Amino acid sequence: MHCRPGFESEVAAEMQELSAQKGIAGYPITRDGAAVVRFVCPEDGDAGRLMRKLDFRQLIFVRQWAVGTWLDVPADDRISPIISACAKGPIASSMWLETADTNDGKALAALTKKLGRPLETALTKTRFVRPAKTDAPRLHVFFESGERLFVGWSWAGNAAPWPMGIPRLKVPRDAPSRSTLKLEEAWHHFIPRDEWDKRLAPGMTAVDLGAAPGGWTWQLVNRHMKVTAVDNGPMAKSLMDSGQVEHVEADGYMFKPKKPVQWLVCDIVDKPARSSAMLSRWLTRGWCREAIVNFKLPMKQRYREVMQCLEHVQDALDEANIRAHIACKQLYTDREEVTCHVRILHAASYKVEQ
Ligand SMILES: C[S@@+](CC[C@H](N)C(=O)[O-])C[C@H]1O[C@@H](n2cnc3c(N)ncnc32)[C@H](O)[C@@H]1O
Image (cartoon, rainbow, N blue to C red; front, side):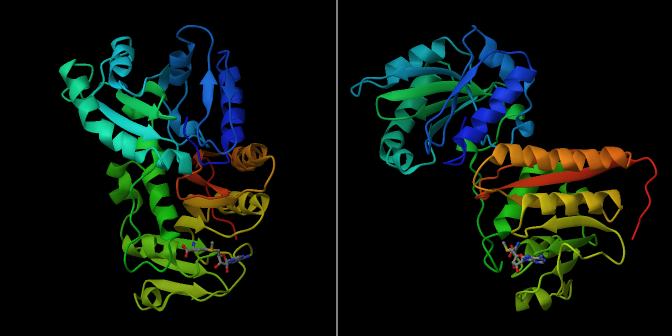
């Protein structure tokens, strides 16, 4: 499993809890800062079973995953052992060469670049990779070092759609801050592309709490929404000139919308418990239908803290008899934080309270 460097123990805690829930024995092996975690299932076939039983979207700290085996390879012929390992696995539709998202990983770039073409040729010749088999899994060849690598597989519907789970998103030229990518990546992660036109539709209304200088507001404006941007700090002039933004200088945690909106987004740096309480209030009072809120994480007990926040939101929704879909992910663009998404599906007695 790939993760953000420094979050290996969160991945370990998450996988231990989930594997126990699914009744599959396994244990994590972690090294701080490695940006990858191994989860070892000693019983034959259990790792694949665990992967099938888990929904990748449910995983918070895992960026990408694959099931497979580790190999030691000699420096003078790395390809033959990879081909032998592929002979024992499923046919793949494509191959991704990966390293860890660390400086050590980056140092392997020259090697993976050199190996990419000949390895792909060998794999298509031996027919262990067949691009026409579009429903086949992807093959991941992960280099821990020049002599140690992992050969594994992931299935497109149950894994990240990018190598190492890293999306290739570019900061739009006129966006006022790099943070703009956080909301864009969140949409890519939480909203299927074919639903964007319906769920991120022109004319919708949105509130952006902690909006300045306006990276997230820029994304909403770019989808032609009308945005109330709440922040005591200044908003970028270009956004205010769009005529689609109302800037309210106020405390985001105290702010109440005059009318319900479709979208609430919040990127305020504060205690996660404050943000989850605010999110619960918005959802249960009918102030928004869909929300994306960042939870800034403390230094310790980060997995526990996130789970408590999510439980708090779920409890509040249950109590209000509101059925909703809650998801949470540490996105590539997230640093010491995770992004929570909630979409209201059905509210039994849905009414707006002030
Ligand atoms: C990480 S920045 C937001 C960046 C923004 N999402 C963007 O893309 O440009 C956090 C913002 O939250 C604001 N902030 C902090 N506490 C706040 C509060 N209680 N209410 C409203 N805004 C707050 C800060 O002024 C700051 O502009």
